[in-house]
Every structure is written in structure tokens, then in C-alpha cells.
Length: 291
Image (cartoon, rainbow, N blue to C red; front, side, top):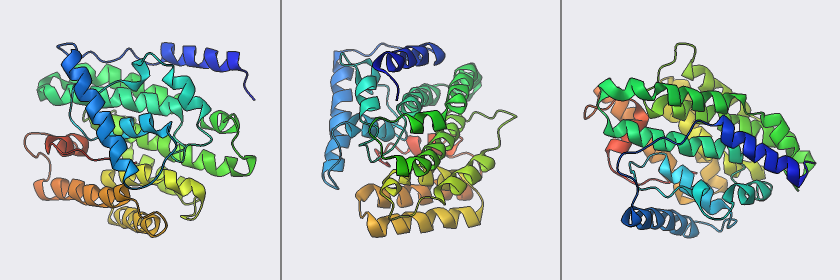
């Protein structure tokens, strides 16, 4: 088990490894800060209406709720006066989302980058590729096995399933980075990432407690793929999850996933001058929470 000093060192190393936070023009003023707090509150209330979650999951919901929402006023939970990173790490064993804190931080940076890309003309998007590439690298080098074996207080008999769940999240985060700014690295095959997600989630039975953590990677894989077999797999898995976890955002995942397919299949490429399913969904101006 890691010592407290080792964990502090890991957090310090992560802060150096991640690219600097993307800069959004017009710094967030006090009004924007309050809007961000309202956004957080909205997501928390949404979840309280569907089920009871561990209090430390609230920042996790905030990050996941930011992935498909277009806004430059999001409150950054990792810049709060309290040490939210340490709190999240200590609660990883009790969090039903089973989302590694390191990957959650990377995902939030990708959300910010995606919002910047949304405000820029397509000709300027290449300027963000270096930042996206750095995030992608940080996600890919994250050691899932080491993380799963060092989650404080986690039952050891679930370690293997925790690894599979986190690997699904890791691949989903990579897809999100890839699509958030319509980033198209030549050495990346998103369909392979989809296949990896399907493979890892095949080890998680819908009745397994960790299945509660699988709706987001299932949604990402389903929204990304053009393969009708994989699309049906995503629908079937979310249906199985709904049978054991009748929570609102499971249905939301199905609805938004179908919407992503429709936007892509019917418009062929661009919709409202926006390319990439993440940006296309953001352009609709809705506020979805898929966890």
C-alpha cells in the first residue's frame, strides 16, 4: 500500500506531467464563477433525484456532466481551495464510478480544450493539436494495473474487474480527447479503442457492483462506432444496465447515443458547420449527464 508521502509525490508528478491548463480568452470573473457553481449544483441535484451516491462522487459527476456541455464558465474542481485530488483518491474504493482520479483530471482538461475548440474557426483548430496530443499521451501512459492494486480499502477479490473497468475508462477518455477537437492523429484507430472497451466490459457482469461504472465508457464506445454490430452491443448493454440500475442517466445515454448516430448518419459529415460527434452534440446546447 502506498504511503501518504508516495501519494503526495504521485500527485506532484501528475501536475508536472499534464499539459498546462488550456487558456480561455476573457478570464472567468465572479459572475462566471457563480454560473459554474450553479452548473455543479444542477448536476448534483439531477443525481440525487435518481439515486444516492457517495458525496465524493459529486466532483466526478461535475466532470462527466461537462463532457457534452459547451461552456467557458465551468468551475474547475481541481483548483478549489480544498485538496480535491486527495479526497478523490481516498474515496476511490467507495466511489461506484470507479473512475481513476488521474484519468478524471485528464478528462476535465479535455473538456476545457473542447470548449476552446468550439469557439474557434476550423482553421485555428490545428493550434490545439499539441495540447490534445499531450493529454492523449498522459492518458495512454497511465498505469491502470498499478492504480487498481493500490486503491486504498478496495476488496482484493474485485481487483481484476476493477482493472478491466478502468481500462475501459482509459480507452473512452482517449476517444473523447480524439473527438473533442476533431483530432485525427495518424497513429490512432478509434475503432480499435471501441473494440478494447467492448473487450474489457465483457468481463463485467451487469449484476457486478462495478457495472455501475460502465455506462459512460459504453456510451462513448457506442457513440463513436459506425459498426452496426457494436452499436447494437452498446444498446444491449445499456438495456441490461437499466434492468438492474433504473437510473435516469442510463436512459439519457441511449437517447444521446442515438442522437449522435443520427447527426452523423443523416448529415454525412457536417452539421451546423461543426464536425465530430462531441462538438455536434455540444452545438445543440443541451445539458446532459451521462455517468
